[in-house]
Amino acid sequence: MFREMRRKAQQIPQETCEEILRKNTSGVLSLAGDDGYPYWVPLSYCYEKGKLIFHCAKTGHKIDAVRRSPKASFCVIDRDEIRAEEYTTYFRSVIVFGMVRIAENDTEKQELIEALAKKYHPEDTEEHRREAIGRELRNLCILEMTVEHISGKEAIELVRMREKQI
Image (cartoon, rainbow, N blue to C red; front, side):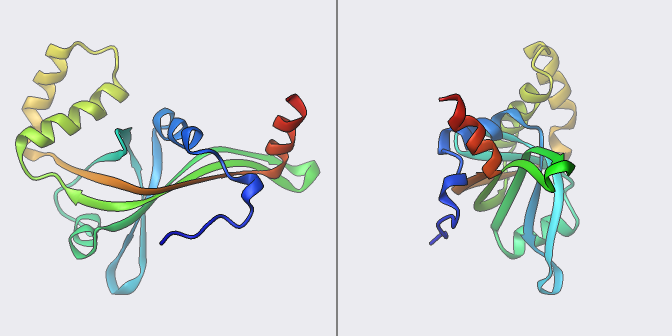
């Protein structure tokens, strides 16, 4: 169903892709937008247990697109280093494909927003986190993307550098 990477030597292993998703904090979600146009939107996220979690407004282009079609992709750029003297970029990125849904009940929203809160403020106490979430829970909209396919790619120069180290 998903295409194989053409330049397999540059493919990042699955475990590394997941590490990249866990450590980074933002990416770009792509949805089927209005009138057939792609709609890309930058978002903060959390990756946990094969799922991406996003916090967003209850209304707008993004929510309309999710309701129209749950199919989505999400891209995270882990490295983007311009090497002008080489006329290239040392890059590393991951693309995730999957289905997005809107979390409906408060129990589920509570669990998902806690995962986001722990990622972005890991030093917070559980009591304070629950208190803060409790104040906003009724107004929260949480999207959950179930991952169906992950692929990652990096610059051939990074592959060669790693091979030299072995």
